[in-house]
Structure formats: C-alpha cells, structure tokens
Image 1: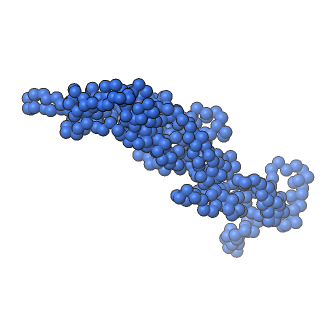
Image 2 (image 1 turned 90 degrees about the vertical axis):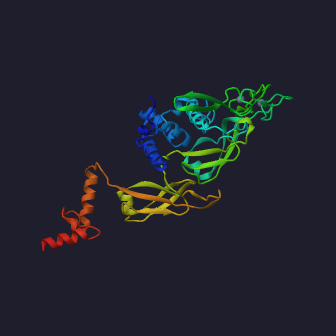
Image 3 (image 1 turned 60 degrees about the vertical axis):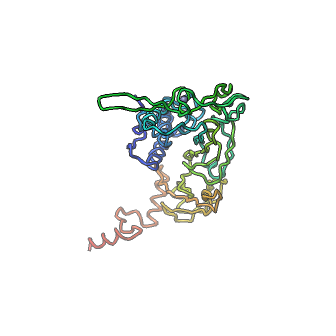
Length: 383
Ligand SMILES: [Zn+2]
Ligand SMILES: [Zn+2]
C-alpha cells in the first residue's frame, strides 16, 4: 500500500504548489524537533511528503499510483533528480506508454544521444544564511560523461553497426491475421533497444551507455536574500544524457528553517518583545536582537500594548531576479505588555496606592476607555 503523501500534509490531490508549501510550513512549525521533540517521526513523514509533492516528477509518480521513495533507495539525494535511471516503477510505466505510442509505426530508430535530465538537490539553510548568502559544497550523484569512450559507447577502434535484427529501423513489426483483418503492431527492437544500431565491442567502463554514475562535489553560491522554495540553477551540472548527450541543469532548492526568534514575511522580519507593565509605563531602553547583533531600542514612557517599532533596513536583503540585491526590508518589533501576576502584599499595596492616586480604584472606569467609545455609550445610557 503506497504512502498517502497528500493525507500526511492534509491537502487535496488538486492542491497547487503554494497550498502544498503553506501546509508544509504550518506543520513544520508545529512539529519541528526544537519545538516538539516527541513528534520527530511525524516531522520526518511530513518532510518526506513535502519533498515528494513539491517535486513535479515525484508527484507525477504518486498521481500514477506509485511511490517514488519506494524505488529511489540508492540515490545520494532522493532518487538522483528528475526521472533519471533510478525510478524502476516509472520506467515501466513510461515503457508501457512508449510502447503503445510506438505502435503507430514509422518513427524510425530513436537517437543514441539524448539530452540529459535536470537534477534537483535541496539544501537546508538557517535564516542567517539566507540573509548573508553562503557558499555550500554539495555532493551530487549524477550521470557524468564516460571518460573511457568520451560518450561514444564503443571501445577504442570499434564503431556502432546497424542492427541486423531490425535492419536499422529500431522497431520490429509483427503482422497478425485476425477476424477483423490484418493487424500490424510494432515494438522497439529488443536487440538494439530501439536504437537501430548496436555496438559490437561496447566500452568496458559504461557498457555502451556513454555515461557513468559518479559522485562529485560542486560548490553552489547562494546569494543573500534567498528564501524558502527558491531554486538556484547550475547550468549543465545535471545528468549527462544517454550516449554522452548534453547535461541537464542542476537545481538547488532552498529549504529555510523556521527561526526561533524572527518570523519572516518576504523581506521583512517580525519579532515580539514582552515588556513588564512598569517598563512600558516608565519607558526604558532594551537590547534588541537583530540579524547583525544587538541594538538599543528606546521605549517611550506610556508605551501601549501592540505598539510596533520599525527598524528600517534591518530585515532581509531584497533579492532581484538578476541575482543582485537591492536594499533591505525592515525589522518590525511588536511590543506586548505583561501585566504583573502573583502580587505580594507590599506590591498590592503599592498598586492600590497608585490606582488611588490616578483615580482608577473605582470598578466602573470603563468610561475612561482610551477611544472613548464605551464611555460615550455608557454616559448616554445613564443619562
Ligand atoms: Zn564508455
Ligand atoms: Zn534492432
């Protein structure tokens, strides 16, 4: 029974990328091991469901009734990217389609040299890394050009020759008589696998495929200002194609870890600071955390709950599609006021005295509400 990735994220099968991303962000925040150590297993499930559903190729496998994680075991990064050789399940399905389409006949052999697939790799970045940019070494496991044959697939001194079995057509026609007449079916030639030619003396390194799998290290330069879900394209660093065909691109997708203190909204950051009631009333100076270290934040006397202080230019770099950054967003500090609890006798006495001095000891001072709205109504009613 295949894992129901949609169910794990709590989204419908029709959910678009944005919905899937939202659902994941919400669950990840609730289940993150830093927040909720008991939910580690569920967090992994959610993470893996997101990895599958946010990857168009893997999602397609799910929608076809398969499970990309069930077949993609070996790959260094979740099945070695898009649709590559790794997916036994998908290969079979695609062969079935390909075979059916090939039944029309007359397509001739397919070329030995095919363009390579794109590959996708994800990196986890902290908010600080997203803000500052980072160079990250990645280990990628992709098909690379076979150096022994330079992609040609033949041992030195030997060359491909036309396939005898299919006469170089790459397919074999089968004529059957039936009660509705003559039925012609065509299928890819099993000897040359539809290529129309065979290599009598295939390269000993790649067995004629022109490419080999290799693990290598590449360095991705992540620009400042990236965010969750952004992809950095590394041209020509994906899979080399069959027959040494041109390599696809490698996409590096950023997964931004939720931050313990800052909440990100585009280029702006938000945080909440709780002030004791006395500090809000008397005014104070706080040490305010920013991405670049602490700053002094002056709180005016009489600061009300819900006051927002905007620290201009202390948010995230604004990343343009050109890859350059252009200014920065703001840091918005939301001030909450904590009303003192568990007063002892002396504190109670002092607060009573304060209330008395301010004429606030009567229970019915709703009439002095700041916006005056309730006061006016009440006054109207008592008149
Ligand atoms: Zn080779
Ligand atoms: Zn053949």
